[in-house]
Image (spheres, rainbow, N blue to C red):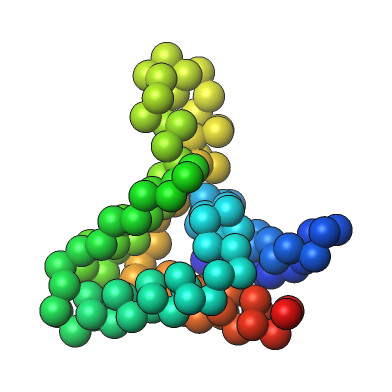
Length: 121
């Protein structure tokens, strides 16, 4: 899973992830943005899952849902569930709106995102 972080013309942080993981970048950009408190809180929840104190976590955002269970992470756009016919016709959109990765990779990306948004202030 490859990614890079930049700023848009307005100075807001933007995460771009490799093919198959685009939804993770969109989730970081749209749902977390530069909210370091939310990022730090999520990292604490991940640590609790890694230690076995929590089994899973689901966060419902405005456009995406993040689900962590064990060592698996999934990000899914809400729009995917809205219309089955839409799903059949727009499979490329679906690929860009869903992503899965391992917890270790996700945690590393999240830590990198935190560093980026902290430095960017």
